[in-house]
Structures are given as C-alpha cells and as structure tokens.
Length: 297
Image 1: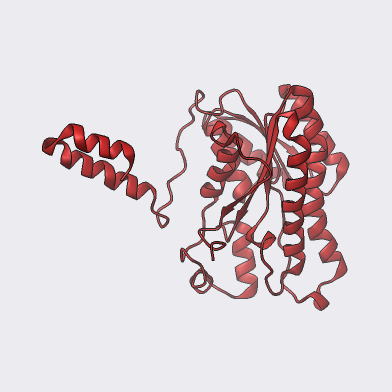
Image 2: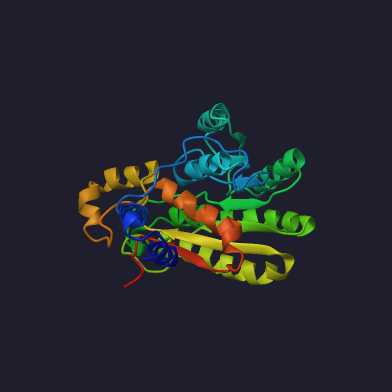
C-alpha cells in the first residue's frame, strides 16, 4: 500500500474504507503487466510536451507511428520520416485530423544526405529540436553466421546502427546550439544477449547501446540527455512478417517470455516519452529495459 493510502486509511476511518479499497484496486489494475493502458484518445495541447518539437525516424508504422501519435496527443509538434511516402502522408494527416501537429518527410536513415536534410528541414520549419527518437530499424531473415549474406549483414548494420549514428551526428550540434535537448535511441533485448540465427541483428543493437553510452558522456555537460530503450517482442507489422516467414505463432513464442505476452507499441511509446520527459532528468547514458522482465534473470 502506498504512503498516501496509509494516510487516507488513518484519516477516513471506517466510512472511507470502501472508497479506499476501490482506489487500491485501481492502483493494482494500473500496475498489472497483463493489461497495459490504452493510448490517449484525444489531443491535449496543454499536456506535458506542449510546445516541444519532436523528431522521429521510422514513424510510418509500428513503434515509430505509435510514438508520433502519442507525442502529438500530449501537445508536441512532430516531424517524422520513413521511406514509404504514401504511408507517411497518411499517418501525418490522421494525426492532424485528430487535432495534433505532424509533418512527414521522406528520408532513408542509411543515406547521410537524407538524414542531414531531415534534421535541417525540421529546424528550418520549427526552429529547434527538443526531442529526437531515433527509431528506424529493420530485422533481417534469420540465419546462422556462416549463412548470412554479406549484403544482408551490411544492410542491417547500416540501417540500425549507422542510421542512429547519422541521426545523432546532425541532431547533437543543433541541440548544443539551442542549449539542450533529449535523444532516445531504439535498441533491443538483442543488444544485451545473443540469440541464435540473428547475429547481424544482435550486432546492430549492441552497437546502438554503445553509441548511446558514449554520446551521453560527451554531451551531459551540454544539457543533452541521451538514452535508449530495449524492447522484447512488440506487436508491429515487422514482427508479424517475421513470425509468418518462420512459420511460428504468438502462442509458441510467448511461452518463453516472463509475462507470456507480446508488448504493445503504445507501451514502447510511453517508455520513450518517459525518458524524454522531466520525470527522467537524472537519467542519461542508460538503456531502459522494457522487455517485461525478460532481462531480469
């Protein structure tokens, strides 16, 4: 029971016990790892990210899209990229239709000039970058090391690791000029452990965590916080495609998970927003475990 609850118990007496029990039940429900909260349905322009400019890569679907919607719902202006133009325009329009602020720009994080133009356009249009979520990434066909084609290995490293490097290369100078900012990078449980048949993905995500730690130390005295998040399996189109290719089901996969379920994109959005918020001002250079307890053992 929380400290507030104990205080309430002392001051409300027997008459307030029923209401207090309801409040405790509500707290328990909110903490239930099997029932994550639903996304915020409406836009609150005066919420915790009001007036903030947020840059997001890979936001035409999946975690990136969910995070773009979540930031916009809490008052932020979101500028995001992805390679699929029609889908990007659709996501941006749907955010605006819901009352949020969002613009889409086609960019491929593997291409330095695309990344540079993406960052510069955001600054030209909105004047600053308060928060950057470097989320874009891919997952390649599983194979043992000796069977991984070199071009596949290079592509996943270029997208997942070099892409994060390029984003920070252009985000950090802008944040230094404006006096500070927040960066959240997309890592993975695969950045902490090794999995059979995904050595290329493992290597790319270990690299993201290493980049995050180094960049955080270099920029702490510039008022720039840099962290990463490490999910397990998240219900995204990329995950569904991977499962379909391998001929496996959610039910088979989750048997080895602590929580026995797939994480949601909204949960990942909440984690990214927490790291970018004023609730995490003492946190930099860390990787946030959002695996549902998978790394606890």
